[in-house]
Length: 247
Image (cartoon, rainbow, N blue to C red; front, side, top):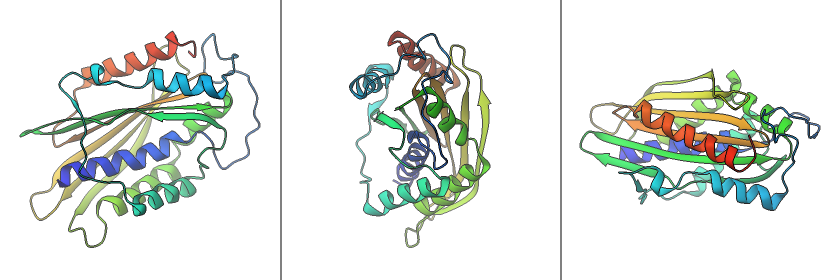
C-alpha cells in the first residue's frame, strides 16, 4: 500500500507542477512560434485544444500488460490544498494562459518485483510563447525546491507512519527531434513504513509542440522503468501531436 500511495502522491504533485501553462510573471500573448514546427502559427480554439489534448494522451492499448489503476488512495481535500500550494510556491497560476488540459488514466503494473506506473498529460496554452515559457520555468531551481518540499509533506505526512529519506529532485534538457526541445525532471527517494526503505523514482519528460505542453510521467518502486518502453511512449505522443498538426 505504501508503494502505491507514494507513487500516486509523486505523480499528483509533479502533474500539478507540469500541467499548468501559465506563470506568475507577466506574459504578453502573441502567436509567434516558440514551440517549433510548421503549424506553430495556427492558433487553436478552445474546442480544438480540448480535442487535441484528448487525442494525444495515452490509452490502454498503448501500454500492454498494464492496467488502469484502481486506486485505493482517494484524492483528499488536503492533497488538493497541497497542489494549490505548490502552484503558488512556483508562481504558476493554474488556468492562466491555458485553453485546455487533459490527463490520461494512470496505468500500473504490479508484481512481486515491484510497481511500475505511467501516465501522460497534455496542456494547451493560448500561444506557443506561453507554452515554451511555462516549460522553461519547470527547470528553475526554485520550482524543484517547491516540488521537493511539498512531496515530502504529501508522502510523509505527520501521523502517517511513513518516512522519506534521500529525496532528490533534478532537471536536465532533453533533445526530442521535431520539437523545440524538452526537459526531464527526475525525483528519487527512499520511503518506508515500519520496514526496509524502498527506492522510488519519478521521471517527468516534458516537451513543447506549438501551443501544447506534453508530459510523460513514469514511476518505479523499487525496480526501474524500462528505458525502451519510455522512449516508445514518448515517440508515440510526439507522433500523435504531429498527426494532429501541432508540431
